[in-house]
Image (tube, rainbow, N blue to C red; front, side, top):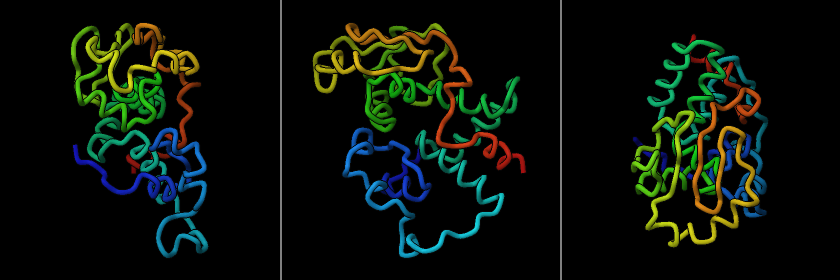
Length: 209
């Protein structure tokens, strides 16, 4: 997919909310959004423009797209799939985004950001049901087992990860075993756990125009 090479910090400032695109840095005093909590550019410190309904819908869509690091085409495809699935379309949309393999790896605590998780998946370091999967957009399902390649467990970022995972709180739909670096997808994400930095209803309205 096409990569967004612009500054991650500018994306957070443009959307007016921390998207946690740089992991631990976003929680530190070095965070650009903390130091400059206004939109980037020469007009960023001026009076914010009045938003129309379309503008609000667009901003929510952009937040979600940038949060999960996916392209416009991919996002539109998720919308189409969410609309064809029974139930609340907004909940369906966020569920599909959450079930992406790179997001599941991030949620387990294996990576500090979704970008890092995507890199781990792309480099083939994650196995799904003992089979290598290097597609970040791969959708996990209930019952899937995620593991780290055996020859990688004692190398690089994986060395100290077992201890770090003991203090990490994963969502209820993922069961993490820190000692073996194994994760089981026990269920689909519940609606209560899908409260993100964006409003999925406005996104549905955006594409339904």
